[in-house]
Structure formats: C-alpha cells, structure tokens
Image (cartoon, rainbow, N blue to C red):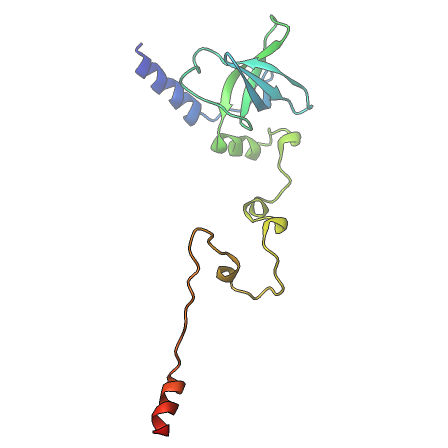
Length: 162
C-alpha cells in the first residue's frame, strides 16, 4: 500500500468512525507532547503518565494539548504505560457524551458563551453603560486629525447683518 493510500485510510478511520470506549480502553486528555511520538496525558483520576503514538498515526494525524484520546494499557515499559488507540474530535466527543460514556472529570462546567466574551478586567474603564463601543476603542496606529465642523447658522447670521 502506498503512503498516500495509507494516509487516506488512516485519516478516514480517525475522522469518520464513531465508537465507544471498550472495557480495556480509557478516555484521557493530552497534556503535553514530549517528543519521539510520546505524549503526556492526564486521566480522569488526575494521574499523569506517558503514552506512545502508534506507527500508523505517525506523520498522518497530529494531536495537540487539550485533545482527547482513547488509550490501551501496555504491560512492557516503566515510563510509557499505554498506547493511543484512537484520537477523538469534536463530533466524536459529542457522540460519546450523548451515549453517557464521557468521564465526569472532563465535562466542562463553564458556559461556552462566557468564554467567548472579553473579561471585565480587559475592558477599558467606563462611567456609563450606554456609551458607543466605537468611542472606547482608539486605533494607536492612526494619526489624530482635528476635524472642524461649520454650522449653517453662523453663515446665515452674517448674511442678515449686511
């Protein structure tokens, strides 16, 4: 099988298959990449240890901090205690939560909408809440130009005096 065909099948398997964890598998969170296809993970019990990335995923699928994976324990090895068996993406995580198999320790208690908002300590001070947001934000990269407005009332008064 060529590299391109292998990559196609591996990525299709990772992205399209929705499976639940088996009895020997565990859902864990990736804490850090340690190099040489080793990753530090955190279990639902707050244990941390190293897991290895199998050769079929190497250079085909990437994981980063905060991703969730299935692991299967391995007997050999003191530092590396498990091997990644499946990488979970957003839709797969949603499916596992709907089936009730998601660990309670990884359920987010915060509202997703509050995460999208700017924290209050990062906003500029404001005396009243009805101010326009455009007045609060100033672009430091633009030069300040004074704008003078003429009113029609002044010109009409000058015309009447003559």
